[in-house]
Image (cartoon, rainbow, N blue to C red; front, side, top):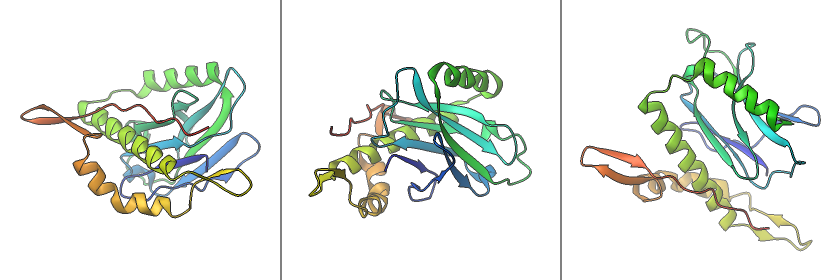
Length: 199
């Protein structure tokens, strides 16, 4: 397993369509109704210096929009995607594209997207933070089940995703990893460092 996507109310999705040597694509039906997406990586293939995994969102046949980067120092991104919906009246099929590109090109595409679409309010920021904490919790949970097979290769049992899915409601609602009191009237998500998989 290298990449996965979390959508609200859905189990983790880890099956992508492979398009060539440098692109993975995931189809999201009725993307207009999705509030945010989280893309995470677990031991992705290492890249040469100067290259990164660019994460792009596409609504229907509209242009791709860069929503983040995944690299050795960042194992997940979580983004409120409503601001990227060009036409909210039609529930298009959407796509998440993961591509290998130069860090410079991805950073430029990300800055272009932010300057065009970034009008976040506090609610969107909170969704981003919750998604990030949720992705970090998933990575930590999966890595805790990591084992070594008889060939000496690392693996994660296939049933672990189901176990995490069955317990995430309790984990989110009770764990201090997600929530810390800010004042008497609100809660704030704690920032957590994405765990490093075993080498």
